[in-house]
Length: 478
Image (cartoon, rainbow, N blue to C red; front, side):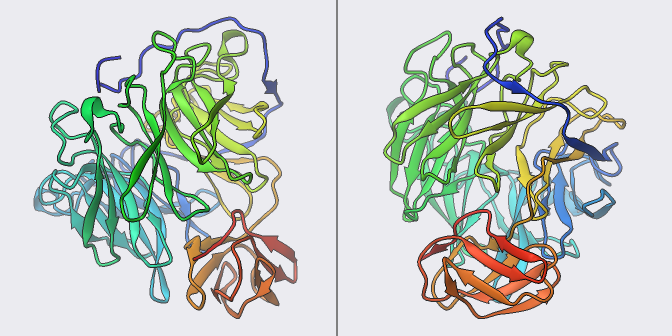
């Protein structure tokens, strides 16, 4: 790997003893085939809106081939909401990436980032309602970052925290800057909290692919793709005020194999309070790893990819992982599987891996962008290319997990309003935060608005005529 080049190199296919579990095909359905006019090359999976539909972006395609916003029903009916680069000079942004839900007073809106376009051509942050017309909140000028694209995290204060892949005040990374972490108010006022590659030899890391994870302590955790003493990437902690601590630097075992992994993605918080993530390369087989890291920085490799003959367990995970409602982790691999075109896998916190689906090209290939789990329990994901239209797909994958509820935002102070998303919520009789009853109102069959009670952090429980629903993650009472 070149210094700060961050390129994926070829994967060495080794014949190793099988340590993963292969299972029969799951409930896999291709929902959308992209073919240019309806979008092309999605980079992130769609997310669930308050109406129960799914909303997302494609990086390319649409009226100007600069990407678009779309709405999709759970069954796969797609509607284009907005095509980017509709304004002269693409000042409305271009090549959108991840979007997320955020709250404004008593409303829920979508917030997203475009990796290009804007006044300076370095990307934008935008907001849009379910109707789809975006409003630009911030134009990146390079010094405050460039090429944003990952989902921002909103705290109960209302402010958002996010990352950029390049930009900032560093002169490294081919002169483009090595990325930033920022804080932004709901109105669009942006403050840079950290410029990466600010230490000698980029010891603090460089280039961020994935969004931040909010830890139980109220601090954020994340990973840089490169940088660190051995240029294998880092895992870090950063406070909401911008104090950054490097927890682990990858490739400490050196090249060519970087036994602990290199090019990390994630991490995400597990139910045990530890963090879990993947590396795209490195490990025993130089095909990537899944790792666990404690809040203090002790790292354990729990799985080395390409542990089955011909890498049928997958290799080179480039999409990160998410924690499912069952406490296990789910994610994609870029290569490997039965057809060497990528897989979706499940892995337990103890490191037992199950291949859930192998892609064959007709259903898409070379997976990036991770997965999302909707409140119906089903996983949704994207492939950037392949499918019948050649420009990528959206798929669903059911593995038998039961429905749950999800809070927006995921933390808040006592007395503030929180939205709870789910299914079949009409007739709800009780809402409790970690056992403490809350006042609430049912807005629709898929949305409840509740007031945070004097409770401690923990899961949300919603009692409906159809049964009890639990939140997929603990709600943090600030």
